[in-house]
Length: 182
Image 1 (cartoon, rainbow, N blue to C red):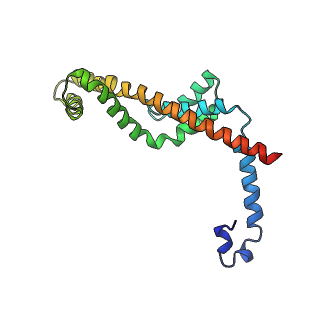
Image 2: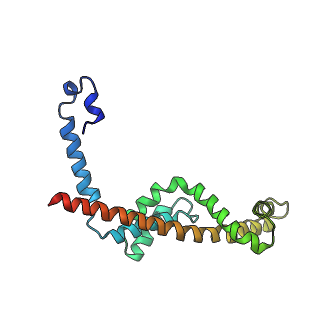
Image 3: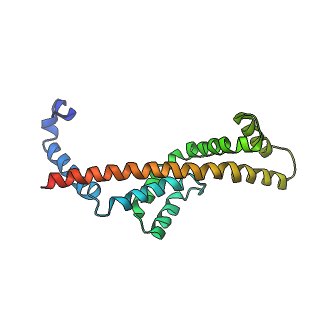
């Protein structure tokens, strides 16, 4: 198999040890990361926990919350914190999905005819002119019912999907490594 680096003119003059360094790097990565000494179940649970935490408002401390929850449940702390950090850029999408999921469930229960009407009503409660107490109550109502219901449902669904995906991936990687070692 030929790599794209092999086609670089003058590569052999400037980088005589490039291939050896690259192979050494990949072997080190494989030993340190791919071959995990812990059970795939614990690592997968840590990764799922890292994703689950990001569905809830943690004010930027999601990776710390994930780390301490992983310690509490005795699952892989590093995978929980790292997954929470790596998926942190998706938090706005996750929050929007929480509102959408919560609205899909609460709109029929509230008696509104459409999803757009329900969301508009929720936001109009938030933007109403009135005293500070009414604004705080409408803000908590919006985040309380719609957002948190959506967060619980989405966290359960995406956490389970992520757990099974990572667990399957780790088992395949460990099997490949065992066959390569023999």
